[in-house]
Image (cartoon, rainbow over all chains, first blue to last red; front, side, top):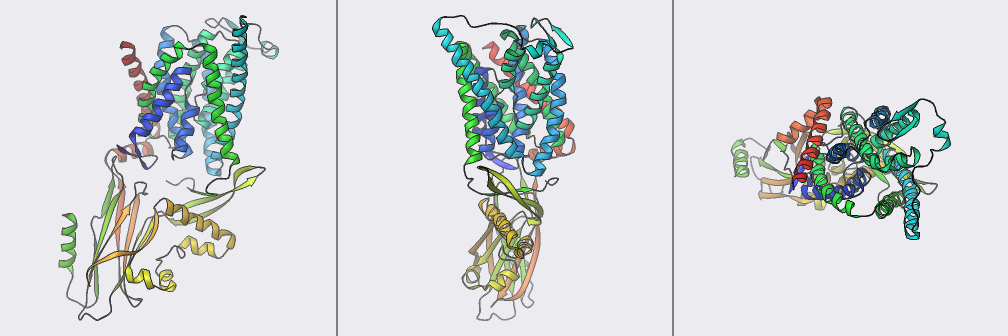
Length: 307
Length: 247
């Protein structure tokens, strides 16, 4: 079945995008991540322009985070105060992001920056996750208990403006919390990702947050920053395609439910190892696109401010 | 049926004066609705003259979309990476340009004729401009190449069919990714490369129905469009949570 997308201005097969949404939803449900880092590249690869892809993935991330966030909230696995502090940074970050996004698009370097950023961040995070997951597996095999809690990094515990986060049982400076929210809000808006795959490890390893509230808090943060990013993209870039978003959402929420069931049946270390490999895979795909000779050296786009 | 009526209208409209060209389009507006997968537009033409001479007519028909400003970027290898390094701006690139020629023209037309009446891509405003500077020419050629791959530019010989020596017809394919705007359909009638008559008509291609409403909502009320999209997203996510929790 064919559908004309009014913003992307092309006719697409409904089932392709429902399926794409479902596949990414499955993965996001399984790992508790937004899935934007997979969906945005898939859309670009399928012929949607990078601008429309990035802007349209933001409401899809809202939809896929909502049902999960609600269930984490019910189980009291979200730290509301931490979420608010992260969001404060997120609002600033998203606003900066949308301005930078417009600038890059006008300069014709949006695709390059998206590729370079994907390589850098996914490569870095994927590498760290892989190392950590392999260590955890190694420890599990040796029958040792993994290290838990511990102290913060010295530089973080030395920072001022300390705030008590009761549900996380933390007493840390607000600076790294707001800074984290800001950076991920910025990246998410420019790259079309929720940033859960950066947020979750950052909360665990940087802030030493207890793992039971990490995913819920990250989801709550992503839900609100991506909702904001959707509105900002509509205002600043006009590239949010509602119909494409709806297709991706429907596929996504259904896929996420099945993914979540499988995810609960798997062990944490195995999940993290798989996610690390997935993240690294996407990074390598982007790396290749930067180094391999493109099929066509030329590309055309409407001059900024038209269409 | 619609085509037949249009054809009849053309035939009836032909007055009995010398060497006159009358043409008609099967529709004067194409609406892009949410199930738009491309369309066809048929152009009919008829010629009258006092006495039919031995030589046959030559016909060229051009469908041209609105001119838009484009940026063309070229990638080069910099430190192993393929980056956009050079760019050129062209301010008047037709968004759509398809030429249909009758068989006799496609076989034997001189380059001079093709160039003069823009029945080729080399003499479009932006190509001509670029041809003065060799380093720009490649950029203009790239535009034509890319547009041809997108089926937005094409030149087809033997595409105009003569139903009678003085009645002809051709059908243009409008791909699903066709840009919206006001198009011009030009019909040229030649004999031995001499222009006898020409006619230009406009054709409107517009978004319509649901897809038009979404596009204008996004364009005119971006804040509410964004908020609405968020509400749709949250509702979808929330509903899905409800449905799957019960199961």
